[in-house]
Amino acid sequence: MLSNIRIVLVQTFHPGNIGATARAMKTMGLTNLVLVNPRQFPDDEATRLAAGAADVLDSAQVVNQLDEAVSDCVQVIGASARLRSLPLPHFEEPDDMAQAVIQNAQHGPVALVFGRERSGLTNDEIRCCTHQVSIPANPDYGILNLSQAVQILAYEVHRAWRRRDDSHYVYQQATETTPPSREQVIYFQEHLGRLMQQSGFITQPHARTEEQLQALFTRAQPSRKELSLLRGLLSAFESHLPDR
Ligand code: SAH
Image (cartoon, rainbow, N blue to C red; front, side, top):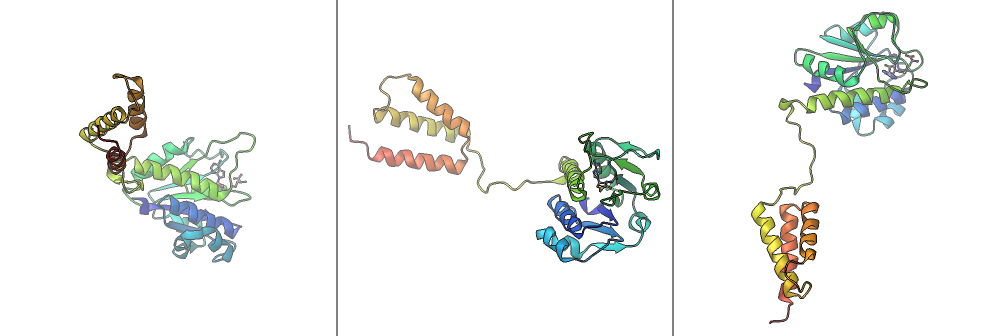
């Protein structure tokens, strides 16, 4: 579904912004970049700012006019900091836009269109769009850098996609996160309690100390592997206790 989402940059002036856009896209799982009449592309500065996303630049398409970039799209959303006089449906919150984008991307390509650094999108270009979106920001200074505007909208699209049941999205997790079973936790607590008594660390039954330490281990939420390490440690201590 994310492969149906296209980022379109119109007449970008700074090649660095094209590179930073590629990077912003790739971090959010987007790879489809179309450049409308860029001032300078390909370019070393673009490649430098793309960092690990040079592949997105390599596969970028360059066209002359915005309509060539969006004519096959089922939805075209123009990103603009300012409300224009054109009465296009307007998303005032990027997350509302993202939900619509994810819905529509099931049926065909969807484009998010970004304007020039200096002058944004022309009225003619806005006419190529079906919707507009703006990123709410400081009313006194609400215009973002081009690639940062791409990052925010790409993040929202990725977030809306992640939240769908069928995205099967799995965040990179630490390799060993299997939680222990209740039984393993209880064995650990008993082992700890026994050792506290046997070592003379606590002398009275029902001492609060035992509860406090157990609360500490519960809060730490050790994984199965970590809990077995802790039990190994307890056993090692235990083997050094003097025979009674
Ligand atoms: N001076 C231009 C701003 C250009 S910033 C203007 O007034 O339109 C370059 C592009 O970044 C914009 O065309 C738009 O696509 C995007 N952008 C920047 N800030 C934005 C915001 N707050 N909301 C939506 N898009 C924004």
